[in-house]
Amino acid sequence: GAGVSQSPSNKVTEKGKDVELRCDPISGHTALYWYRQSLGQGLEFLIYFQGNSAPDKSGLPSDRFSAERTGGSVSTLTIQRTQQEDSAVYLCASSWPTGAAEQFFGPGTRLTVL
Amino acid sequence: KQEVTQIPAALSVPEGENLVLNCSFTDSAIYNLQWFRQDPGKGLTSLLLIQSSQREQTSGRLNASLDKSSGRSTLYIAASQPGDSATYLCAGAGSYQLTFGKGTKLSVIP
Image (cartoon, rainbow over the protein chains, first blue to last red):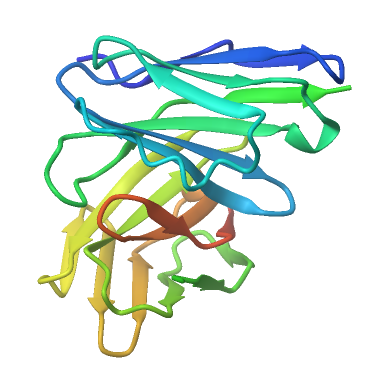
């Protein structure tokens, strides 16, 4: 079946603009994760969704970042008032709901803030 | 807080060599350890997952081991090929989130 998909693959925006990044998980996976990969910081956890439970937002770097998951499937990561330090690759992953299940990653969205 | 370290940061080997990539972690209370491959400009491809109760996993020319007591994992690649050139990342799982090392960039020279 299809893997995790993300869109857009590349996004260039101006500082101060809002952006939305989309993730479609593997069908049937109820757990969904967002990570960020930047040159200086490596791969960092951002947020975790599991079914209808409240998400774990502990990795979000500031209140400009938010994410939602509609219908237990597609997720959108929104960054408001983008800053240059937000430039990174944003990766989405999904898994089965069992504890510490194998995570499968999408191809990522490369965000460049000018 | 879990910290994951990978050594070396980069490795260059001639084709056909066997090689070992190292990963160490500070918190032994991990649920599992996952090895990934990342090609330039691409996402992560899962290679092997070792549950905390396991000692090793094998897939083709790849073998990964896990020693929780010493906080170490290794990824062994047999008979390396130019197509193995990529960055290899290890990640330790808490109850759900992964903590990643910075990766080892492998170059296999034909």
